[in-house]
Image 1: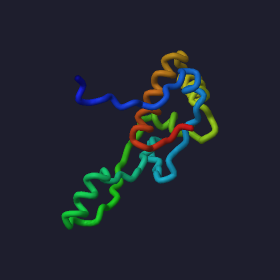
Image 2: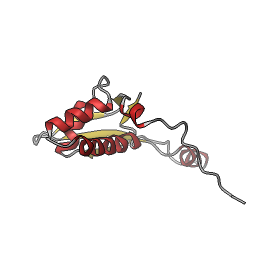
Image 3: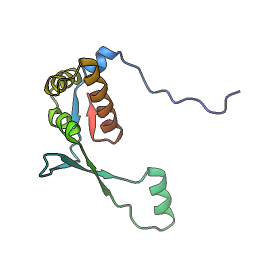
Length: 127
């Protein structure tokens, strides 16, 4: 007997479909370019709804939105600059591979892992 069920992640898509998706930046973020050329992304972070409800119920302070920062390295900055809401993941990978003289598979792994992390933090959406 299982006590817990695995969460379904929704419908899975093929690798080709995933590469044809278009990443787009979250409109709630702001970015700052440092003198070094690297980018620092400022993004809002809110409390989890359950925790915020408990704080409010027990008379705690109103939930405030905090801002976090994420400083990108040179490679992250170059991928970030390519995200324009028009280019597919496949096009980003090809541009990144050409610019940094990488093998296509090596560029694919690096770019998709980076995009996955940006998506996990809510900095980009994929359509």
